[in-house]
Image (cartoon, rainbow, N blue to C red; front, side):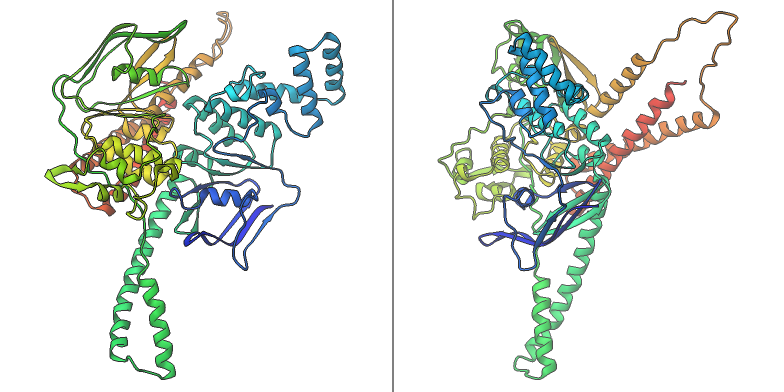
Length: 619
């Protein structure tokens, strides 16, 4: 059954074409991810579906199935700030939901008579099963105090409230705009597992590549106003998109050769007036237009020089930090070495940002010491650090730091050129900061951090509001970065690609140092959970038959050996690719191919490790 179809839809703002005759079809059961660069029409397309924007074009039309229940989870949830959580969640026209709301309110502030009356209403409407399901959902989303006011909630809490409201509605078709923003990793993984199992039809905009990989069965891409569809998940998208771009490049090259040939004929026959000649002249202008098509891939190219680190870098000696009775960091010690790449993970409010501020001495620990080496130059990208002056232009913000920026091998770059590399064309550089989008402000903020030549980078949630294309280029720069690196991020793909080990904030001030990336940590936790949840069998009497212990077969033992060899091969290839990036002597086309290969290697390693864990249980 077709839920939604858009045909020949166009949209432009002034001279900028956002959508150029696109077609989109969504049927029951589809789980579709939309990817595109920032500012190329993702939000516009969602607003068209929601009826908030009109489509353009004489033959344009949009059709939505009759009586289809559609829900939208917006990037910034639209909630009533003066309402309580229970009032917001249950603000829908449904008798059962209204009965549950009345019952919960009666339990909170009602009399015995009101509780009895609301209980009878629940009984008559057969709402008890739904109430149990709602409570289970609120528990999973960690929404406990349902009588809190919306305006006092954090961004992550508001996102969870909006999510609960939508999932309670049980729509047929759910549209998600950056659903993982403001959520911690634990909540993201719950939502991912829920959507994987759900029969909901989904259309989502997200930069979370694991979401796209594990949930979607189709990826659609908006590229220069056109829409391209790719069956499969994110890995399939990378492979098929690469093939498309190679084919387009080959066609463009042939068109350019044809244009040169036709141009020579035009120069020889400027006054031709015959019918055939006129037809060929018309053909010439068509070829000319196709031959001069330019791809604006808008790749962020980062080559900024960083100062060398000395022997002493950063040392935390038995540091602790608490706010009243809330212990965030307790007796944490660590000594950084050159080139370390650390990820910090933990629930929202567990103390991740506090730990960063202790390391940079912005906060003084309650106990212990932090020692920073003389050569250390921090570059601290803050989650809440968008304090750029709104009354200044983009170019003024950059020039306040430096007119010229030192690059590798003694080269220099002007502030204007550097901004162009960061997707700020010269025509935009005189725009005031107040006019920039959230993603553009974050990109500019990141630039101001990097151009100060840090040798110790601290990135606190750097991926918010950045599109996938920009993230890929940022990752390539960070793979080549030779200084120390600390990343706090809910983007698991970003973390897995860049860090060697983790600081895991487990609560009550405990910081665990884990050797490995996030995916290996997740697999280990899943394995431990399976072992813990295994039912323990009571001891059997001697005379009873004992169930034989499960052992590996010959083929399974051989499979285990092959997996170990394959993982070793993949790790060696992964190291070789990373060394190529560090060497900085590879072409742009090779960078894209190697990036795709690196992603495929990481995916295969994860799959092999899962199977290895499964088999190793029976050794």
